[in-house]
Length: 390
Image (cartoon, rainbow, N blue to C red):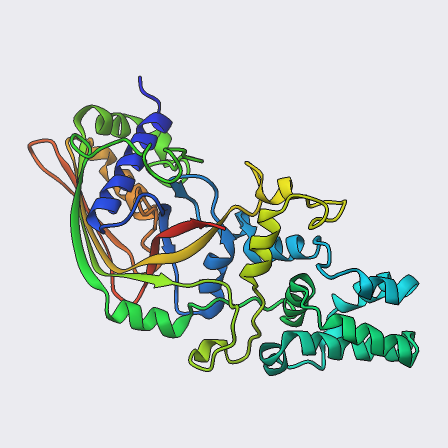
């Protein structure tokens, strides 16, 4: 007997390929979300998706707490890089240099610096932080000389300054305003998954067919009750007609340059600097990296924590599905079967209580079970994400 995990892994691969074909997505970037992942209309919830680093897998359970965070990983990397100046600044500060390094990464150091100052001239903003510190630690001649050396643009110090100045509020460029606009402009898509015909091969995807974790057909312990039904899916197949009433691609990334065109970002400061990450990735040596963790290998090695980022969310609003299985359910067990369906079943795994979902089960005399499900518009779900290398 084929195990349920084997059956579901195959179905998951077919669902991946059906979504890719039906929505005209690129498998070189697309990662499928396992289950229905409600998005809502909230900046912070949207940003949690962009802040999560996707694992190398064709599909993923987007329970956000299970992921490494892009913002935390970025902070770990840039705070472990060697200051990229001539060394004159370090020499001039002498024994005070380490005190300065500790001070400049504190929230207190940046409390009087505005977002406008950082965006207008990040080096001058850093010099202002330095002056505030130097008043208490250096004589005037040393301060003057050190400020001259600071005019040598140091991408590491500038990047760390921006990151600290954000004070833990790491915004992304896609938010509520863009989501509403994109969903409103979304296109209707209809496609079919036929387990007897839909391709099972995902080896040409960006994750090379790797699949982490396999979801069950039913929620919780209901699978054990309906093992024969699940085995029938393997032997006789399942057909599912899918309609997404609106499909939208919500592109976004870390907030790096100040803009007045996005109202969702009015209360936030830019915190990301691509140049320093590219420099860190290109140079493994201790000219760039400090002699401590995290190392280049920790971040950018084969199993590093800082390899990928989310470029876009694939959002669907309004879902209708009709699933047909050539199977029979005994009359005395139908109420229990319908309860299991109502609690949530593959591929969206949502019960009737959540997100406006409704499920209906019908049985035919010819031996088929038809499950009809719907989620009304106004409840956007993430069907997957587009992934890129950092």
